[in-house]
Image 1 (cartoon, rainbow, N blue to C red):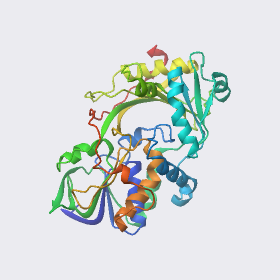
Image 2: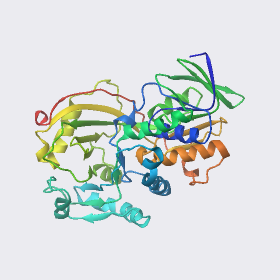
Image 3: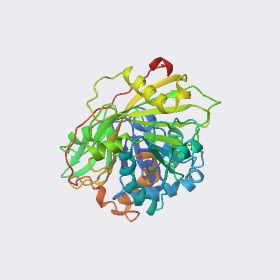
Image 4: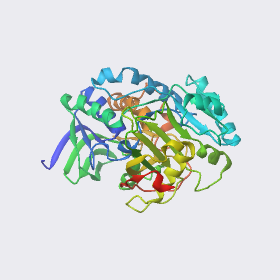
Length: 406
């Protein structure tokens, strides 16, 4: 590669958000480069379950964005000319206590009024929907038919497959090491593969956004928590009908209880029979680059509690990644006031559901200087939020059986 490449826009980060942004910019006729320090989907996007869901989104400001983005999925496969494995299969949230039930009521009321229906159901109704669930220790649950799932790798490559013939330049293993700023104006980025000139730089870098910001004197409110997951061998004689998650974090948010046991379990099944089982830890410092045996054991114990039939499932691999959050639960989406030509699109809760609209929003900001698609003022990168603890990214692998962890 030559020492300098010139583009209209440089997008940093090739996850589901960055790939969408790169596609939409290229489709709009802008000369665009997409830079990724590893390979496409190497971060949280490649580690997630592909859930197109609203269970965890912030509800005061984010609902219009969720509704608009979810609607894009009705036609996205046709637009991209490729299957992304999108299925609307519904979601169950398991409520273990009365406190979790009560804490969920107001949220469900707001979402239902907005057009995302939630139904509170007793344990016997949970068994009707999901016969695999042991409901003996459950208070009840919520069910929403609105939720869906897709393959995140297919989504990312569908964007790229469409964008590259239109002129998108994809650079993997290209790490940003600095920014070229002149008189408060973005001029490009420095990387391990040379300099990229661009009048606009978009950071869709999730957990790496805050470290990159510190290179230019910014300390954006982005933090991470560790998420660990496992995938089983195909199990053809067991059928899961929905996406399932527990609700321990809801009780933590309401009561302020900080308990290592109160982790969140999520579970789904792929069309070819693999069970995906994940656990989101409470915030804490992560320094070990390898996944410990404690994480698979905790996941297995939690899964076995609600799904006894999975205790003998053989696990193909396990991994750990960092997923991001801000103190108010909203993403950082919009221009950075201090640096003309720098735009953030980072720290989405449930990035999959926001992916299509993120590309539209950023493209409109770049081409017109404004956003008419939705009101993005609540997501301004410079908004004031309470400081929180930072956690760093780790990834690795593990194999074994569920039964070995009991």
